[in-house]
Length: 113
Image 1 (tube, rainbow, N blue to C red):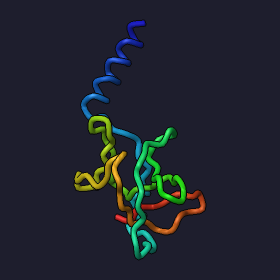
Image 2 (image 1 turned 180 degrees about the vertical axis):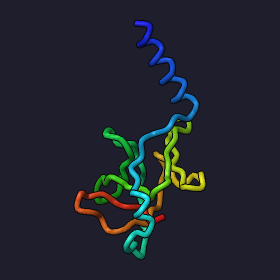
Image 3 (image 1 turned 45 degrees about the vertical axis):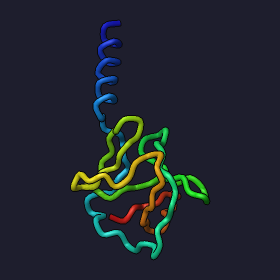
């Protein structure tokens, strides 16, 4: 019982103070993505139940793979995605413009860095 309470307390502290969120990223070797579309796609980011994020666009919901070095952290009720320099590049629940490569066979968009 004490262990469960301690784990719940630590989880609450991490969430309240900007805990990390799982984010799908490409491997370090994939710094150069082959080809990006000439125009961005528009939609909204949402948390994925299996970890990571999805991109909700007019043509469907797509898993997103971010460049190596990107991270995600809670920021209040939202999750902020940060680039390798620590700059916020997107937030869940807000309109976003993404430059992506062609969808992979698994139906996921790879964000161009």
